[in-house]
Length: 518
Length: 88
Image (tube, rainbow over the protein chains, first blue to last red):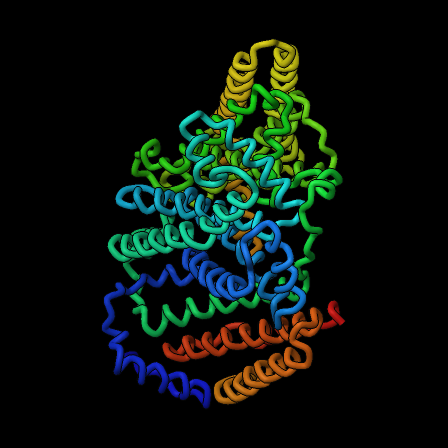
């Protein structure tokens, strides 16, 4: 074991404890491979934090199991009993709920990090697929757990969700019916949800955690795609015991502290029990992580006959994400050289966040979303997100690329290609301002025109008696809009680049920074 | 100011005090919502203290001095006081 410098009472105690453990368990000669120094960063351990959250879920869930009874008559009274009568019961219930939220947030953050840094590339394709399945299981935990308190909101929202799921293609609908509805009736449904929540889903998640951990041990932690080989070569290997174990303990303690503090500050407020009379006064609301689905289904084109098509679109998006390594087979991992994938990722994230906020703000209204509004809002967000991402990526690439790869620009003084004389040239803020304004306004104006055209077309098509045609037009319209936005931005940027304005502007700012430093 | 043994002693005492205080507050009335909230906040602070102790131990084992330790400790204490103020 590493010799530890003795620094005081707690240090000595901890050191002696670790040495005691190490002598008996042989932890420092363990089977876990050392991790590279660059991975001592919280962003590399989001999956491990998800496991910590899963463990907290297990402990708090087990404590609630001691009191909870899964029948329609007793589910709510026992939930209320835990909150009001059991010592520390309110905190346990609240902690269980907030840890479920944390698990979903951590799963999403872990997925997006892996997506943007292309961790799903060879040989880690299966790790990505297993990670995606774990994320879907986390959502299933949320879905099944939402019903268990048997509140008026959870029961009505679950009924609505089941109604939506039964619109899936017949085989999937039958599977959903078998898994979550059972032979029919509230009692059977609650029992199915309970069994899934405490047995099948935890077992599946635990199994996947073990498999993914074994694969991580086999492949190691993915190197940062933007790091230089020379820097990577300098990285030290850090043994799991005691340093990485301690680091994970620190991160886990901070996460648990944050969840405890949130539970203390915003304890759970149990809604009224479900009864048909009480349900009549409530508009069903999903949990926040399903609001984007709920709001998508509120778009008028996806109502009634359009519902299966909406489910098909959402299902296709999920399947494409799960099997991303099959579609994205190139070996380039650097996000600066993957503008298309990075832009698509940012646009999807922006749309999910926008749909969630939009849905949250209009939760109680119960009104549908006109197609024109949906296209205008979501299209504008997609356009802005794409423009901002492409612009930032190009700037990032230009700033970090080696000097010999940078495009020379035409110096206004010498009228010749130069890479040195710009250092003494004072940049004009007026020109820079006009260029930036044009760079953003041109695609925005073109995008607004296209949006107007597409939404008008869709508005007329929405009155068509053939929803399949309407849906096809919607998909085609959005696709065309996205392609047109991309092409416009690309053309504007190429023109700018040919004139040398972008490179010149960056170089000017860099030279100003250097002069300021001196 | 707060280095080596002084930090160790201070944090050790703080950790023990937080755990004892959190348990004491909880046991005043274990089913009351407010005592549960206050004890949870104190235990949350003890977890932060624990992570600071672990951090110091990890940093000391390769000779790297703890970074921003004093700032972090004050932030944790301020967060605890703020939480208590909100609840009370």
